[in-house]
Amino acid sequence: MRSIDLNSDLGEGYGAWTMGDDTAMLDIVSSANVACGFHAGDPATILATVRRAAERGVAVGAHVSYPDRVGFGRRNMDVTSEELTADVIYQIGALQGLCAAAGTRVSYVKPHGALYNTIASDSRQAAAVIAGIQVVDPSLVLMGLAGAPILVQAREAGLATIAEAFADRAYTPEGTLVSRRQAGAVLEDAEAIARRMLRLATDGVIDAVDGSPLSLEAESICVHGASPGAVAMAARIREVLLAHGVKVAAFGGDA
Image 1 (tube, helix red, strand yellow):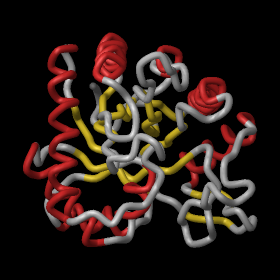
Image 2 (spheres, rainbow, N blue to C red):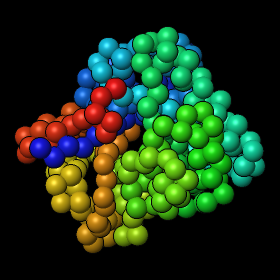
Image 3 (cartoon, rainbow, N blue to C red):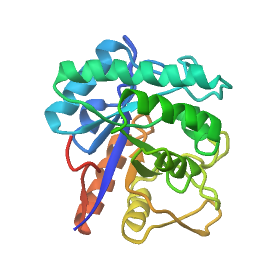
Image 4 (tube, one colour):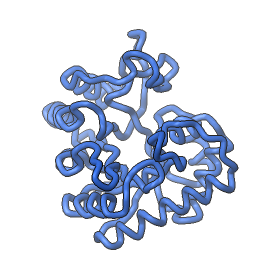
């Protein structure tokens, strides 16, 4: 049976402020990209999230970010390589401690927001992130944008990688994400998105924003936990995939 991972960005609440429905999403996804405090998340929220993930057998990934709580990690930063490497080490280490307390572990790293988009093609910052991962645990898997140079760079450096596609984001014909500043960048029709992800999982193709077919070899599908109707969207994607013989499972096989 064909298999694909389904992931979501979770643990992004802060204090009295909640973002998304982590509990409901953890009943649907196979992997959870958990905030590490730099763009969102506080220790208690993060710990509660990884505990729920452990209870459900959901794999946990470190959702590392630029230090940008006000901008939710979506503002570009021209940081030094040394600083970025240290930031990545710090965030992974913090999540590893909380995971140990919850009886689970960090199995992969997925950069967040502006950092994710920057390192997709910026080899200097990509190298800094890769270095941070390797120092902490070279067995950690790096999740990155399907088709992006970062995946090749990481593999050449000795890291295992997982190629990711976004269910709720529009793509350019070149395979990059349409900027959130542009109309139509974020998709919301759950039924259309589910059909789109089924085509991706079975044929490796989605339609770009201009209607042209785009080939993507993706091993994981992301639904942003804070997107409108995220839980219903993720549930429908899972239902459609399973109905057509596509298994939803963490890429490592288990948590």
